[in-house]
Length: 279
Image 1 (cartoon, rainbow, N blue to C red):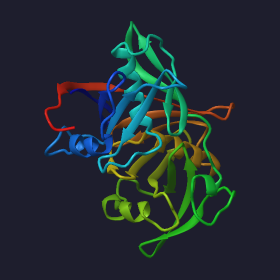
Image 2: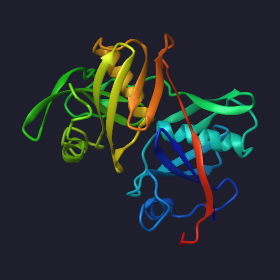
Image 3: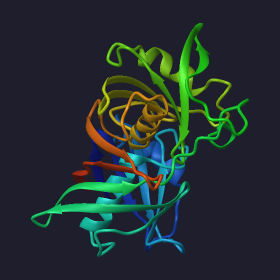
């Protein structure tokens, strides 16, 4: 089975094309392919599938086999794959996801793709819809959360998948490896949580580190940058357009007057190959 490997700000993905193939156990395949010692190695497996409601359907699986609702860096890589490999013939098109229909646009310069912009839709702010237990329809802005005996202030957002944004004084020095799983599995998050630890540098620049559900520490999280900007606006520490610096690069995010979040960043091919393992 042929595959391509991609990365967006260091967040890396394997893409396999099943537009004209019968589905297999993609969750089990993700566990094998994403393994960095016995497989290809990736933060996720992305599968190209036919769609009845959009140009193409995207399915994504974490390294532990779970299927998240959405992946921001992944959808940029997915969109570029579709464009580069001729699966779509337009610069702007639609992709069906669990989180709804997303609209990416490849950005060209001298006929070469330089970035991908994605309309990520409207952020979900009601606690029960993110979901976060105990908040009903209330927005969760700078609310207390006790983890490992210490109180933090969380602002929660869903970009199709759930996020808790924690503003910190020093993102680089935050003990992410030690505490990330404790945030992810906190009882207040019924579907677990992606957690962003964010240091605001100025109103148009923030430094973000992330712990992702089912993947752990990653070099970037596209939906996390969207959640970070949203949380920054709600806490009045970021403007409605800002550069979010992640471990693997910079992603530009805008919360436009339409209410939609637009995310723009790189999507780069790494290599192609043929999977010899079992399906």
